[in-house]
Amino acid sequence: YVMVVYDLRNPAGHGAVPDTNWAPPARHHPDWTLAKLGEVFGIALDDAPMPNIYLTSARVYNQSALGTGKVFKADGATGAVSTFAVLPNQGEGLGNIAYDRAHQQFFVTDFYDGKIYRLNSSGTILQAFSPSGAGAPVPVTQRVWGIGVFEDRVYYGTWGPPSRVFSIALDANGALIGTGALEVTLPPGKSGSTEPISDLAFSVDGHLLVAERGMFNGSQPIPHQARILEFPSYATFAQSF
Image (cartoon, rainbow, N blue to C red; front, side, top):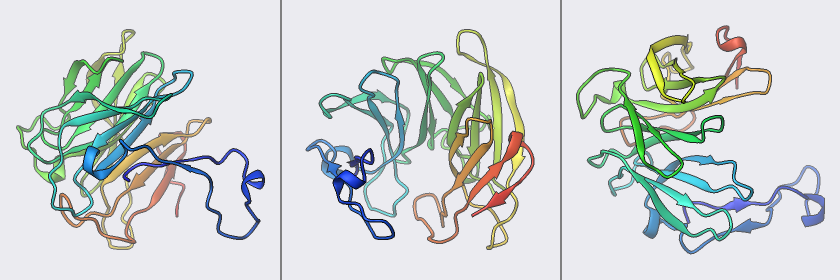
């Protein structure tokens, strides 16, 4: 399986004991396998009453199989998987995916052409934005990966080094407008450099959370190099773990 859903709602009722490892109830579906999905990395949920799960095809686990441009949708009620969208790709795979609740749309990063794709709730491509302006295939160092939406702006993380977070505005209809603005540049880690930014999230009080993924090259990971960084008000480095 390449996806599993864990039920964390009632630990005590499912045998959890404080200060011990706990195996929570897990749900698997026959469609959630390597044979049917290939490698996947990005994940997002929509705001349906029983939220659907969206996954991006990937090639970041040092496996022999190539990635694709597919975004998959796992039905929130049945778990059955369908292809939600197919983006341009030549085996590099996709980066991550974010759901924009205010405009009922998705943003997906593509490792092939370095673009951010805006999709509607049916998976139709509405817009493609190229942060680097480079032609496809883009160099690994110019890939965009992590992506998030907060207060009518889309935030995206670059591969680097150095790894940076940029943002771009959304208009009233949810379209990307203008150009990317630099928000933060990650400080060097213990290796003396930075790792690619693979995920972005925001706390309820507006702190930007940045997750790195240690990568040796375009498809081979490095363990024990990545960090989680917190930036209050998007700008001032606070702490790393």
